[in-house]
Structure formats: C-alpha cells, structure tokens
Amino acid sequence: MVAEKGKKAKLEEKGVEENSEQIDGALVFSIEKLQEIQDELEKINEEASEKVLEVEQKYNELRKPVYDKRHDIIKSIPDFWLTAFLSHPVLGELLTEEDQKIFKHINSLEVEDCKDLKSGYSITFNFNRNPYFEDTKLTKTFTFLDEGIKITATQIKWKEDMGLPNGVNHEKKGNKRQFVEERFVYHTC
Image (cartoon, rainbow, N blue to C red):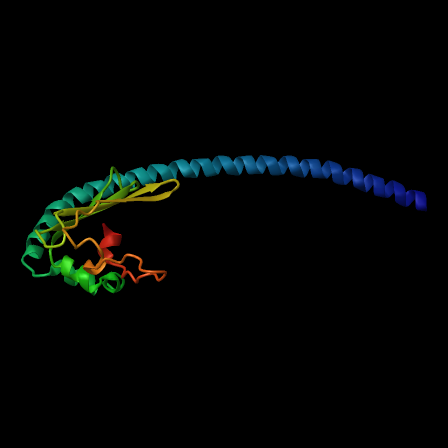
C-alpha cells in the first residue's frame, strides 16, 4: 500500500511537470499575442495623437484673428491683466503689493505653443514703460522633456534699487537671516 502511494505521487508529480510545461508554453504564447495587440493599439493611439495635434493646430490658426480682436478690446480696459490675475483663486494669492504695482503696467499677455502642443509653451508678458525694469517683454518657457519640465525665463533688467524685493537690501547682518518676501514677478519671469 505504501509502495502504491509512492508510485501514485511520482506519477502525479510527473503529470504536474508536463502540465506545467504546457501551461508555461500556453502562457508565454498568450503574453506574446497580448503584446502584439498592445503594440497595435499603441500605433493607433500615436496616429490619433498626431491627427488631434493637426486639428488643434488648424483651430489655433482660426482662433488667432479672434484673439486679436479680444486683445484690442482688452487694451481699452484699465488694469485688465492686474484684475484678471487678482480674480484668479490661486494666482491672486501670489501677488504681493509690489507685484500689483508692476502688473498695472502689463499691456498684453501672449501664450504660444512651442513647435507643437506636446513639446511645451511660452508665456510672454508685454509691459508699457515702467519704473521697475527696462524690459518691455518678459517670457517664461515651459519645455516638456522625458526627464521632466524645463523652465527658462527672461533675465529681468531691473532699474536701480528695484531688483531687490520691496526695494530693500536684505544682506545678512550678524547671524540673523533677514525676511525676504516672495514675489510673483520673481517666480514668473
């Protein structure tokens, strides 16, 4: 009886090994077929993305004259961009009193796509002559890379005594660190 149990166990074990080889082969085959289908889906999705990009670019061109009309009307509204930023629930919280004084001098804002929508965009703040800096345009560009987002910005050419937060020199005195108020303009451009 003990010998029979041993033979039976060996036969079952051998059957499991053969069955396991069949399962492994079937599993590998199924995974390969699944990968082929996934590759086919990725190819279709890539083609769809290209077509969506083409349509998006076409409609961006159609929007341009409408944006130009809107821009002309915005120019006639005093402090439009300051009001727009202050009205935004997040951006409004970032504007300091000094930033608000600077934003009074914005005459237009442009958002432009880089080569295509997928690679990034840039925001250009156009300013009237102002007492804060020499620049009439400040641009911040966001480029989407595989490694993450690369952000580049115009180096602001501040007028004398205007480049430091609040026009105050915050050099270290003794061992105490001086408080430097964060300003939106420093983060934006």
